[in-house]
Figure 1 (cartoon, protein in one colour):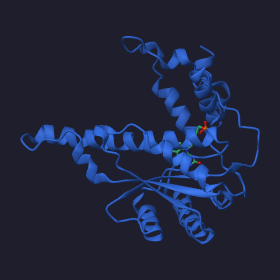
Figure 2 (figure 1 turned 180 degrees about the horizontal axis):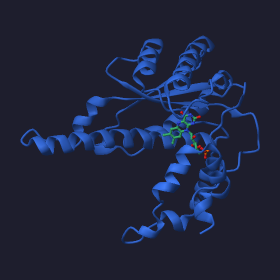
Figure 3 (figure 1 turned 90 degrees about the vertical axis):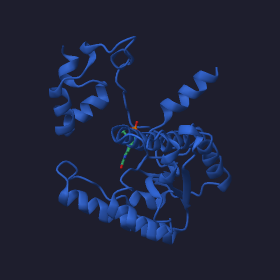
Figure 4 (figure 1 turned 120 degrees about the vertical axis):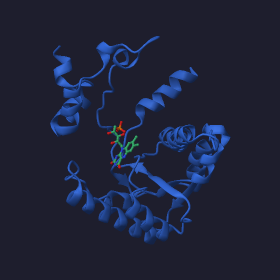
Length: 245
Ligand SMILES: Cc1cc2nc3c(=O)[nH]c(=O)nc-3n(C[C@H](O)[C@H](O)[C@H](O)COP(=O)(O)O)c2cc1C
């Protein structure tokens, strides 16, 4: 039964980009963050900090920073010309900025005796750090869903320009990373957008990787290059050419 309840929360979660302007009790915000602090972490480093923005004035400031970020994407990116402004965030009850303390990367394997190994461990430490903070984010979004709250994982807060602006606005120490932003609020619609994940048998490989299941370069190119293929993908759970095979 525990698994069934957990899976139903996992399946119910959707990225919510429209909120009712209703307040969320502080107790519920704290419940969500309580779940975050129990996440697993590399070498038990717990390198996270959570900055919860609730003041309307601060929210407007942050949304302004995100608007500039979207403008940059529309201007400079090859594939995010449609980047929307995030004004819907103004209706969220709170914005949780998930920060990481990169000093804790030293808690992961390192080497001073061998240059090659030192480089390998350094790269690996980057991954452990991001994986660790992501584990806390997953706990946040699932705990929020279980309380009837909507969230969306907003990345790009670590972009150097955006990150600098956010750190100033939120008085986050320069040495920390602001990795992402998770709004918390009541979804404005009860109807979740449909989403079909890739079929279980396509993504699971027992004992060794099954090459037949590996998506071709052509499929990936279509996925990243043609937005309508994305929507087909989300509807069918598969890229059309794969479906027809
Ligand atoms: C690491 C990560 C970064 C994401 N960044 C953004 C983002 O910047 N903006 C956004 O609107 N959604 C973002 N999302 C949400 C995804 O678009 C969303 O999870 C995906 O389309 C699947 O939809 P669902 O979450 O409703 O199941 C991100 C999700 C993840 C896991």
